[in-house]
Length: 336
Ligand code: AHM
Ligand code: MG
Image 1 (tube, rainbow, N blue to C red):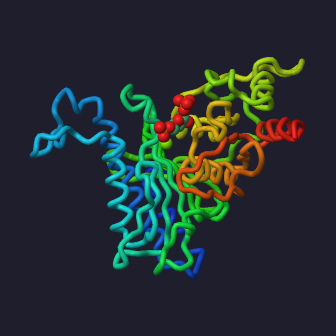
Image 2 (image 1 turned 180 degrees about the vertical axis):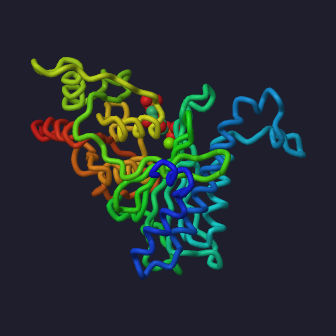
Image 3 (image 1 turned 135 degrees about the horizontal axis):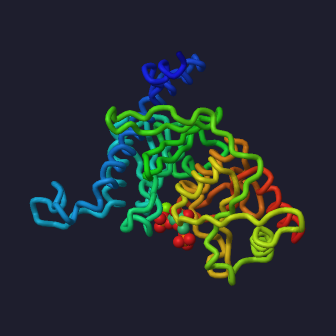
């Protein structure tokens, strides 16, 4: 009985990654260990996010510390947990977090061969009203980790060995790619384990949804404006697309991945490089999109080809279903 097997033969995320690794004889289990520390961070943030609305009301432990200081903000707390979990894994040498201005270089005794770039809690404007937020991460391999330097964190996205996000939504979902497809895992709160629920995610080739902050429209460039115009007033014979915009990249990208369509955070006159950060927002999401059969484009080039010069650099981004991104690429090509 297939259904019974699913209920009793649980494919946890650790088991899944161990299986994957056994295909690579050179692998020493380092990635599995690193991932289990990332997963720990996600579980912690999930539990904090779930309690966030109650913290003020019932005075959860930790709300005020012994010195009577106010509870740390959720994004700062999440960052502290991720940094400590990653350092203590003994598998990282450089960490780049949205929350920290400078990169963290791990002390020699705890160094390992991975560089992790992450946004511990993205979607800050949605925290206080209980709307979905998420964690985004990307992993690079560092050649010489005994002497880590900043440029080892400044590699193009195509060099990533893994990328993923965890969405704190109606359920807690972790989506991961280690470079051979995309898989989704859902946290079973009673077990405290992520279970494979969305094997081998493929994004529909074409979608019916576009996702963008249209409030910026007056400052858009020609191709972006034309694209969105086409979504609303398509050529005769095709129907208009639906607009969905949460304002949490993880939630907007997750929906795009599952339902198809396009997510845009374009450049505009006020922010000529857009808003989203290359290393820990644009790259991991672009990596997942390509692995799921979609595309990610900056308005000039394939997003994963970008070579960032600074750790907090921004880039415009258009990502999603293959055909939909093809359309915006054509509009930019026509203008060039
Ligand atoms: P944040 O890092 O301050 O949370 O900002 C990133 C978020 C993304 O999750 C989302 O895609 C975007 O900002 C929404 O921006 P806007 O409010 O300009 O539409
Ligand atoms: Mg962010």
